[in-house]
Image (cartoon, rainbow, N blue to C red):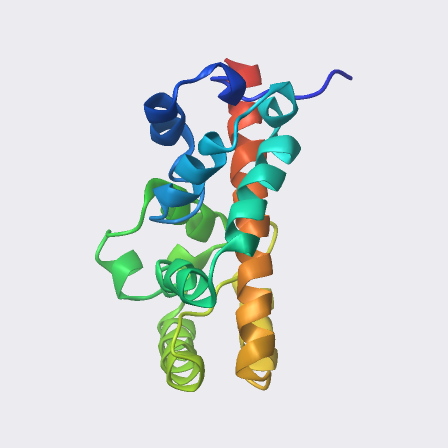
Length: 179
């Protein structure tokens, strides 16, 4: 099976078009795409894995403050932004795919309690790549991760954000193949 390619191909785009096409891969953080383009892109970045790695390098090289800003750009799961329809299209689709839009009132109240406790403890939202998980698995992860140290959780949040980015790129490549 041939390698899945992104469309449009990152290596063939100018900076503005690249940032417009891929600046939303990391939630509300187009600086990651812009800095990635500034390093130069070649055919290795035309695949989801190749571009994900290039984007990841920018995040991993960023300051702790920039990483915290990236984490804080993510919405609470099943939170007010979801209820108010304020999520990005990717976040809305991902949360719906995990069934977070179908929570019972009790589950929704539990998400609200956990979101508040998590923010109180870590001063950023709980971030998890929800694709492939259901709300029960997400709630269980929430409970477990509340016991981590702040440094462990910052590291896990960044890893989850990288996973979200790769999944988003893979989804886009699959969509472009099916057209």
